[in-house]
Length: 550
Ligand code: FBP
Image (cartoon, rainbow, N blue to C red; front, side, top):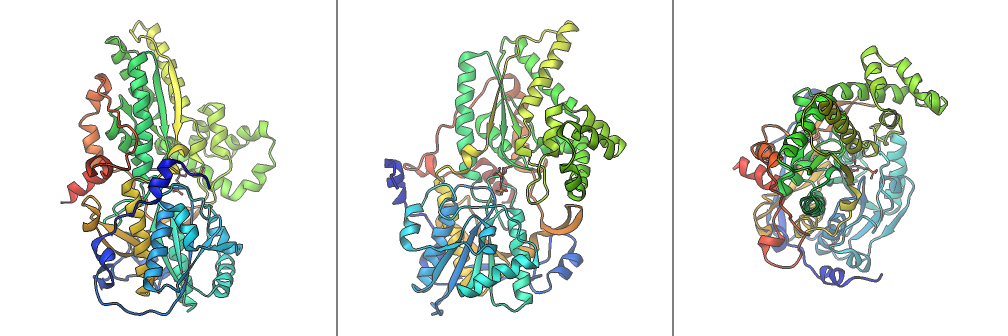
């Protein structure tokens, strides 16, 4: 594999570990029994073997010689910078425990387990991928592991390879699956442990014990760099409004973090839209007002950040999508046989009056995107909806109306961008390199300590890495019951942006000024070599959230 000079230098970077892990050996200190965040009785009944376990923290202890064992690892869902370092940390941790331990990677996500597609991960393979972005070492996929047939098929290869533990690196849905699998293996007395690791650029897999999901740091810094570049271009040419959509399937953490980093003129936060029961027209009007106010000062330019999941948070649209999800979960087969030109009318005829009216009012392209193929979890693929174009088009129409009414609106020329895939495989920042390596290493210790149904947890992450703490959180603690594909299911509760959280409050305190003044910040590219002040700072979201807790 040909490498750039930066890649060669980066391969030699030794990620930092929490002191307890770096010094090793460790022992597990157990806390009090836990319970799920909600719906305790239902969750407890579904997870009799893995419910209520205590939180585990690692402290220094005495070396214990463990027999050699084989471990499997799966990368699941969307790519996130640092995934390779989780595997590297897991590998190094396992080898430290016993050099005869072996690690197998399942190919292209959970599907690799079911299809028996795997490869042994040797030291040479691991070394090729240290501190690199992407998931290409073994690939990823979105197969949802949920049926007994899949579990049994997976168990066949697990038995054949004599695997004693499986590490699932994934987001909320994949870790929910890991939890279900851990319970299944425990109930069957198969002797296979399952450990999860919190991954997703979306930043929505977090709680009191999981401070952040990996990849969020690097992805946000990558987007903030290019948004900053756009802002500088915008402030130089002074003739365009840039509508920038940012990834994040549901939560607006990425948009919010980027706003805190670059100080745009406008940033929409989906969770606020929902809480304030805003309509599409309310959002359009709020943007048009800022465009007109800036035009009045001679500034016919600006930047608007739009979270990818916005559409689903507009209450009327949310109700429509929920009915569509349930309807299509049952009637997908029939729908697929309807001629494309009749699909819109078919849906209009099948929905409730309120939702049918909303559906009928949408531009053709948007309504089509809402009925397109779901992801394997039954969700609308929001990344396909061009919200940035929809909003700028509607703002243009609104401004034209105001102009007819005699208001001054200046000139409005819009450009569109969508940043998502550009950041998911970026070379991990020092934070993500260290955090991911620590998560993987922690997973190896959870395995060594016989844990199952736990997620690796590394905390105190705004302090220098040596002061981080490592341990494990029972995944059942994060579960609640939610409606999925028309049925109530135990799932990890997604962490959305909260309006009383420190990051939103910091944004809300400044946004009116950012709207009118041009006070852009240009963060520049991620730095890997240099002072900790420049290279090792975590996201503003993480810093503000942790400050609030103290
Ligand atoms: P995960 O939750 O699996 O980490 O994926 C997040 C994400 O990057 C979202 O931001 C985006 O909506 C989605 O994946 C895109 O999915 P795909 O890669 O399948 O197009």
